[in-house]
Image 1 (cartoon, rainbow, N blue to C red):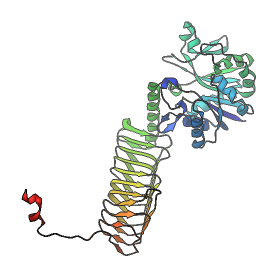
Image 2: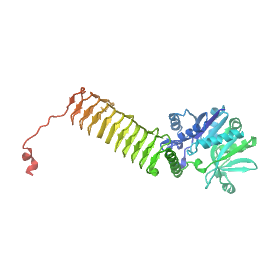
Image 3: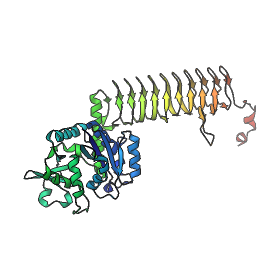
Length: 456
């Protein structure tokens, strides 16, 4: 059976008052469209398409970058949810069933969506929709069951009696495709907004066969239409993810200040201290500790790593028994070997630090390769940019780089070589050699007695 998923992501989100299209609003480092694609994948659909409209090029680029293999369909002009589905008809007409999900319900779970789909298939419905009992139904379409039929009326078009109904439409549907194709072109736009509403297909399908209503918890269908709702949904997602991870053994000393994204993986006996954010494709190895005030994205920690905060790590891979921080910044593809160390006030960019090597403090290492067992003295800088391009620095095994060394790239320091403190190294240093590149010290005797300062 061929079941597809269609994500409605064309809206502007006017009430959010943002230049960012709604589909790209981030929650814990991931866009809303990511969560929609993820839930459809978890529910087991065979393929997915995303309807884009406002800033469609940006949304389409995000969809492609996420790697789900989803297609995009352009809705222009944007004339409502039914029009969005109609715009995608060439994509879905060959399916057996179509799951339709709005982009702004990231709390919808794969389990709930799969349950909706299973009920639709088992009952042979032409349409099955997801609904919820709202504490405050204001703004939602009301689900009305009358004489065995089901219809949905939008808030702006509802009578006072209909607005008292608390059963609300969640905007999530499963359709029998052949039946949907028969009615989608027959919908009108005689309503307050002058738009084509997808809920108007429900009574038409009900006149042809069975329509089902599946009720779930209100929290799973919480939408995002303004900054307050955005904050509330973000918080709910944060708590959900933390509870899952803590249930698997993660220790959070202050869960209320911890933000961990949905793609993060956590090993055994991992500790996270207060005010930590971990996003993207990050993975924390067994027995690792992430210190307070640390921000990480797309970072892999091996076993027994220790990140001392505050530190910031982006796109980095750390081996086992690595220590970083405090006040360290790793970025752009850093690799650290087992038992290596990056200490206080150190920035590492696009470099590899070898096994057991140390960059203890007050250094910048960029576009460099450092071998095993090497020590980088305080104040060392790899001068990698010549004003036109970035150049590499290669430091071998068991080297000792003296404090305040300037390594002017491109340059190579051989194995077991040493640089004298304060040197400006512009030429390669052979293995086992000492590189000295500084002016000879001169002492002027009697200077103090002759100095103008002394005469004052």
